[in-house]
Amino acid sequence: MLTRTSTQSLTEQLAGRFAERIRTRLLAPGARLPSVRECARQQGVSPHTVVAAYDQLLAQGLVEARRQRGFYVRDSAAGQDARTPGPVVHAIASPLPASGVPADASSLIRGMFHRQSDKPQPGMGVFPPDWMESTFMPTSLRRLTSTRALQDLSLQYGEPLGDTALRRSLSQKLVSINVPAAPDQIITTIGATHALDIVSRTLLRAGDPVMVEEPGWAIEFARLESLGMRILPVPRRADGPDLEVMAKYCEAHKPKLFVSVSVLHNPTGYSLSPGSAHRVLQLANKHDFHIVEDDTYSHLAPEHATRLCALDGLQRTIYVSGFAKILAPNWRIGFLAAPPGLLGGLLETKLLATLTTPALFERALAWCIDQGQLRRHADRIRVRLDGARARTVKLALSHDCTFVSEPAGLFGWVDTGVDTDALTQRMLDEGYLLAPGSLFHARRPPSTLMRINFATAQDAEFWKVFGRVRG
Image (tube, rainbow, N blue to C red; front, side, top):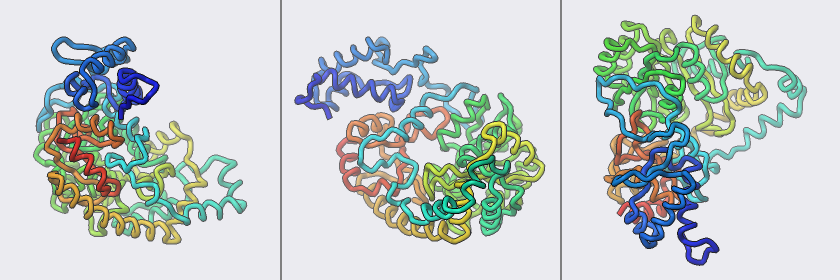
């Protein structure tokens, strides 16, 4: 909060706060600053102080004034308003044009790494650090570093496909969810995002149309746009993607790829139904496109969950997953499993980008899987998450929020009743980072929705502040 006891004036403090958010992309290029009157009310200062602070930001080249519209964050790279709204994307809208990484997605990426405070952060996409603490990970590394394996694994390049022991473990793990992948059909990667990138760079070329679920992961929209792809947003329903929209896209644009989170979809928590899965596969066979199934939340999923790769047997499908969500965000180990005919190209893309992946960590992870340590850890996390989810749902409902989808998995998709872009900026003043609903749409339309992390949103104090700030 602004304070009159600071060595800086209120004007300097306010200008400094906005400047920091602009530089860290918590306020993206093109974002509109609060009106002078609204900012004065929020900060408890006079309109004169706000005008003076905005003048400082203008002098620093961080914002621009638009006649009768207010103050906007400058896009210094493009020299234009990155948030000027484009046409709303409807069922059969034209594909989104290729561009550089959208400023709003960059804002999300930077925001997720920018520590706001020591308070729980409901907008974050991972479990709190204390949930992830374990003894088996350090034990697995000590076993390797105290033996000859340290030299064998560290002093030479690893295997191109990835550590053999890990690929065997992953193969057995996939069989348990009915995905038939031999060890030599698996390629290890530096996290699941790297696996998605390998697939895109191998199968697509700039200008190719790609179907992506919406709402969806903002970074996936940004990643594909940065590669020059044409994004075709497919509305995500409770039972799966909107099949009518997919069929029309197939006729009009002949997409090369469909990217889907079948199980515990981010941000809605939806899971694919068997009937919808069969119809998606029928479309893929009829219109000759591949499907990438991102199963990042597999460790939290029920055993009976429907997966496209299991029904398809890895013919048109490619399976992607990783361990950042359940193990540790900084243990960047992911993998993909693919049809034999695609493996050569996928492996070449991996080698061109990273040569190989860290065999020491991969071997340590294999031990954690084989000893049952990872499974027991995931069981404990699920039980703890169930309790946190129940508490969070009660708190959200008591503060007049509604759930757009049935609460499941790590995330809740919540309607707040107010513009969550504006709410996000006000909550930043209180030390909380939110994930506003507009982030999860390709065109970033205004939204009253937000995604909450059940593990970090069970804090009653957050909801107390939320209720006060929302008004």
